[in-house]
Length: 295
Image (cartoon, rainbow, N blue to C red; front, side):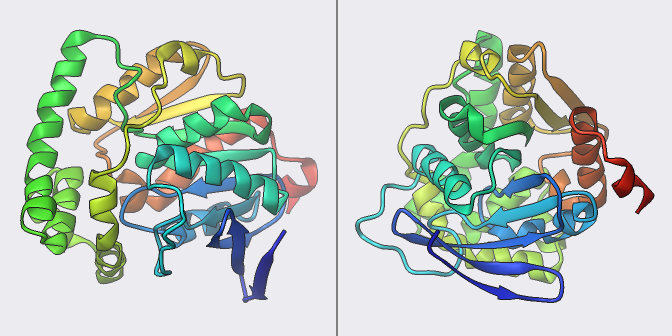
């Protein structure tokens, strides 16, 4: 493992070399490893609150995916997309020596998680995925139509802002307003969250222009050998809820959570509740030992 590390009061932080990229990470706690994988317009620090809440029971780990964060991009890197990030996820777990891990993923990272777990199942004890966002395993024609209509409604203005006008800040605002499901949602977030999202505005053209994601079918999901929980918000718009409900149907032996009064932004809006949902799922798989319960 090629890495540099420094010790802080609560975290071990460092950089891990993965296929030519230095990926920042943070790890805290002890016990079974729970790895958090972020989605769009953010980095590993978005999971700080959730990791803190679970670190008394688990070794919580998060890293910043390639192209995210503040580092420079290399011309010889593989293209931005699910395949690249899934390959990186596998390489990170192997290089860190953390596997097999419990994996927690949100949004874009959900398809990354499924792709990695399908090809390297031995590296993952379980998957907890909140609102994955890729259509490939949605089989019902009416649901595919609902997804397409909502995707056009939400992402049409974003494409126009980013690719048409080159206005990345407007693209960030539109993406967050769409995900939060109300005009002005971006502006209601805490200042540090807005700043984090704007720092990652440069990734928007890559995300909008990424290669077609791997075609994962319903049968592929059903073949996953590890326990899987798919969660989604009761109020979430179709571009996310259609995919989530389809994933639940494709995983008849899996678990699922429907979060009352929640949208796509629930993990960030309610970190304590999100952490409790993750902990509840993990407790069904790996009950706490007596010494941890006593502590």
